Image (cartoon, rainbow, N blue to C red; front, side, top):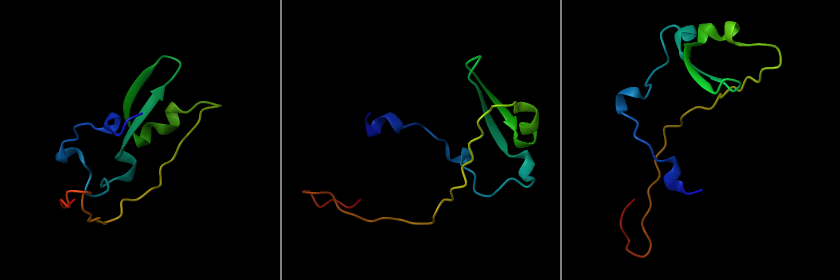
Length: 79
């Protein structure tokens, strides 16, 4: 695996700056492994999508307002 494997184009307008006005209207990606299909839903659709034995993975991480400064070795260029 290479770091470049994680490079992708993400238009700035698709990066959420604030939470959705109605939290249950936030977007939800549903992976149907049996059919090999990804579906785009609203979070309010979740109860209808879950079945007995399903795995629900929650991501409760937050973005920290942080910046790192460094310099390239051996050129000394700013990063």
